Length: 287
Ligand SMILES: *Cc1c(COP(=O)(O)O)cnc(C)c1O
Image 1 (cartoon, protein in one colour):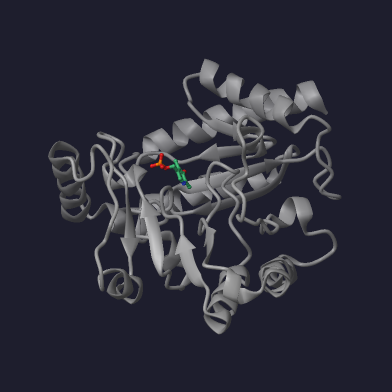
Image 2 (cartoon, protein in one colour):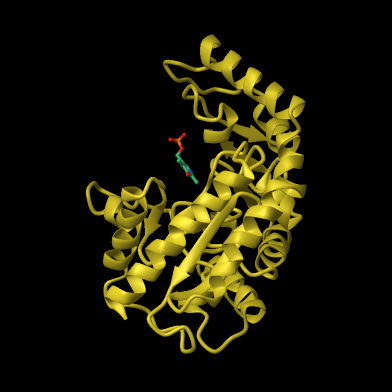
């Protein structure tokens, strides 16, 4: 989120970035699988450049959320996990969006089959009803820190009201089997509706995992050419949806969906119909 960096003295020194596994925009002539490996190996190159002994951890979201719901190619995470393991770099999975059932598993990393050393969590921990977040720490890391003390502190650390809201939320997710519902039932129903947009003239690709989905718009779906002003078309489609009763987010030229885990089939149908109307209208306006 470069626009945030520009506002303060950011990015923080000693945090280095590598490329994102965003095949549609940056994959060029490579297949998604080839691109997944190539972009993961940017981590290896960066570690060579910095010296692995100078690097504490690699941090990423299992699926990029606010950045566009960008689902990495299947080859990406296994390669990242291999590199972190070989170089003894801690792997931190930012589960703030992906966690607590969103992907049809309890955590996003389980969808991809890797084990992080640490995982920041928030949003789904309380389903947003009260503000609460945290960092899950593996034994491997905790055992080292606990040799002295786990020193940290916030004004509202362990706030009992938020903690009880989170516990009750987790109890309900378990009791109502919402994770299983996303994986086996409403998730597949939603994915079918979402992937139906692949055939739309304005749509370059659709991606969905559980109840988390991205829809890439393109000027020319055959060549993957994008619109000159990606923000403008995204905002246009978003506004059309909002005016017709559907709150959908846009990041650049990608439309993002992340409906509640209790969404019904009728509501998914409404969502698909409203988005279709918006995309049809955008195609007439922007082609
Ligand atoms: C919202 C969000 C955050 C910020 O979480 P805070 O609890 O506000 O610190 C971090 N990572 C991701 C992926 C997010 O979506």
